[in-house]
Image 1 (cartoon, rainbow, N blue to C red):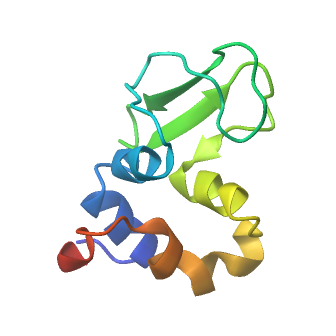
Image 2 (cartoon, helix red, strand yellow):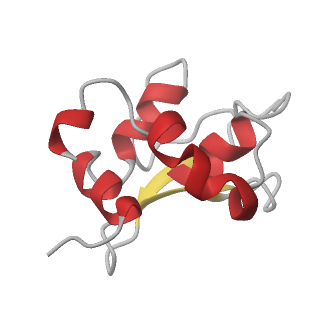
Amino acid sequence: MIRTIKEQILHATDGGLQVFRHYISFAITPGKKFRNPLYDDRRASCFIYKVPRTGIYRMNDFGDPTCSGDCFWFVATLHGMDLQKDFPRGLRVKYVPAGCYNTL
């Protein structure tokens, strides 16, 4: 049984992959490198991968290890939100792409 809103969002968005795809303006393929959209990245050193143990997708940036995290971290960073402080307030509004609300 899915208990938290975070778990519901991850379940409804294929472990967060749909959230990354919604907020990144170009096509991404898990495991394939791309330029980090959060800063002026000159080399494709960033990629999305699925954590086998959890089934959650994460972004990793070899060029800047501080620019790595799950879909919630990514959207919070993109919108200038503090993940710890703003997470409960902005969770439903910011993180769920249109069309996924019907599964929550």
